[in-house]
Length: 269
Image 1 (cartoon, rainbow, N blue to C red):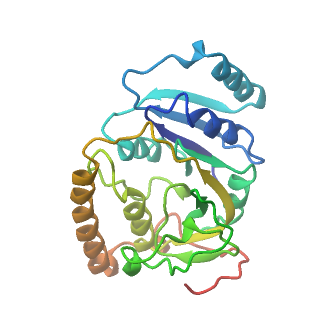
Image 2: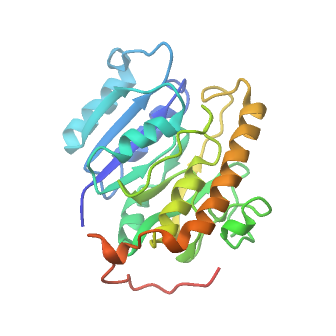
């Protein structure tokens, strides 16, 4: 069913959340086939000189987890995600540099993969951490008026129109929108919705990543103006995708033709 690349784009979080994120990846019950970290920190540091990172890199090696630390594009995380998208892996598990995964997350996401599935996500819980589902449909028409399904505690597998933050996706099918600003507002929503418009199903399934919100790192300056810029691009692109969906190539005419569906109990959103 293909190999999995785990991709992390990071900026300014060496000494806050990144170490915990990478440790959670190393402790997965189903390891990815490779881990790549795209480092947008300016200036970057050689973390091999830091004791705790040296320990972590040694654990990667002992577990047989191939890993690579790359200089990022420094144009926004979507540029780094696009690099991962084109690295030749069939699947990419994208993990934010402030989200810590429970040990069975990748195993649970991988269990839902089928020929007609484009991406699978699970809960991404921010403080105050909730233990209930959110009241949300997951439909693209409701994206500006309801919370994201992944913000709640997901208890069953179901289909949605778009995913958020961290998910496992089928690589090389669609591209990330590089017209977005360096904060990349709604980049993951556009990316996954376009996968759905290509004929693939998007799923959410039980599993948890903990969002360790931190005041340092990421991109802070000019955020509101950049967010408004990206929102205009997002809304226009969603409308364009809706209108062109009938003309888009379906997976049924490609080499990724769906041939089976996972054994799921799917609730209509």
